[in-house]
Image 1: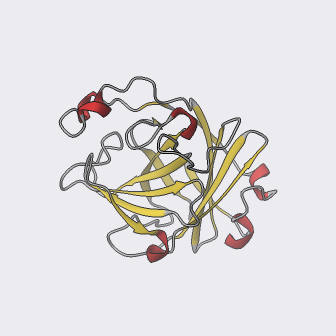
Image 2: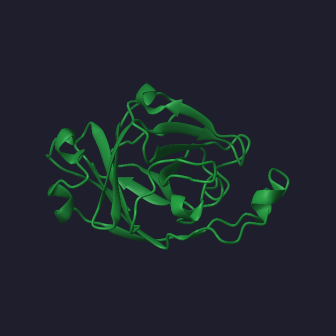
Length: 214
């Protein structure tokens, strides 16, 4: 996957329905249920889940203007789950995951000494989270503003369109985007109407290469 360099200002790209996205090159992602048997020691209840992963396909496009990386993730869901009005209700959510170590796994959100960095958006929340994890149950959520991370989302015509933005350069314990270099990327989506949360989600598989165009 390639992050294309454009002359369009980041502010114009922050609109999920901006016409700039219509002409942007898009990648189609095959999504699958996260395998949960491996989390038995952390959560036996979660490990027996077998009705999650309702989102089967997503679409992503990524651009940068030399200062800011902008990524739009889109997927079909007929009705948005964006409010919680009872104990057994959950909202739609999405995450973009990056490795912070060469052998980090997207499936497990990393491991001890092999951290991952994720951008986590939840419907109904004004701001995204910037997450550091070293395996199941280790996620540390931080306000996205601390690293310059922002997100805007719109549900239209039966689809969520979520735009994430963050400066190419930020603190050393977060993913850095260097033009001409590669990192990895993976995705996760939660369907609130299917009571998906935590490990109950769809994900795109292990990290695929992400090249930042120079």
